[in-house]
Image (cartoon, rainbow, N blue to C red; front, side):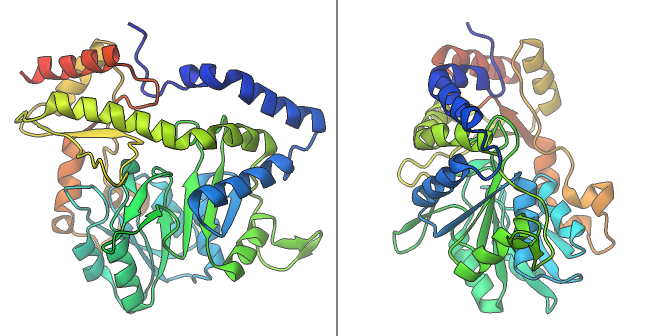
Length: 376
């Protein structure tokens, strides 16, 4: 059996090696390393794939969130509501801009922001919501946009983990995650479903004026060379990374299907086990593209299982072991433990198994057998 990887980028690269190398070589031959033709090509390709008017490439996913908030004109002290159970980049950008983060609990079923908790967190100072499409599962954007419209709030989608996922609406329509709010942000970190071979990110919007503002902010506040019209940052997707992404973007749906197929095999093996809550798989809407395959281990030794798997050469991880409201950087007297019952439970139960496009049946069987061997 081939060695099991948490994310097998090498095997994925081997399948597209010639095309990727040729694409990178073209950048090297033309010496267009910054804002070259490959970046413009990727921008247009991603706009077409997502069905969005404007894609603004940038240096990484964290920058994408920061630039999005800067472009929306949020002011120090404005409250921004987001989920407590996610990676710190979401809240750190809020704090970095001297906005006021308001962390709320998540839903036990999908691990995304809890709609009732979101509604209760809104105050006269609330100006924006940042829903996170966690682990590749699209959150309930229909409900979130309803709340936002009701309270005149801005919505910034953190789509770092769910590019390619579809959000389904009650009228039967679908839209890509990241394209529904006022602005969306994503990451092309190598392990993402659409990953480059370094750092990269992008911002999405259908608002023409906002797109113009965002482009300037990402380029030192310039629209004309050496004319700085707004306060900006230096955040650009380099041409070599765009060259890689142009090769991989046409394969994104295929990659998503491979992840869904692996997830389906995992969940079938765990079906009915009293100590395992596996993620549900929707066969009709592609609402989950499985950036991570995350179990909940209930009434059993989660940490012991993790060590058992590691001892057998099976990588696994806990995403995330500490809630954001308990992180030293974001402690706040406003937060009460009773406000986060689901998050506080999840951090004790979650365990993510290997998930990538190259998992084969032999590996999946070895992983699932090993889990069941420990849990009985």
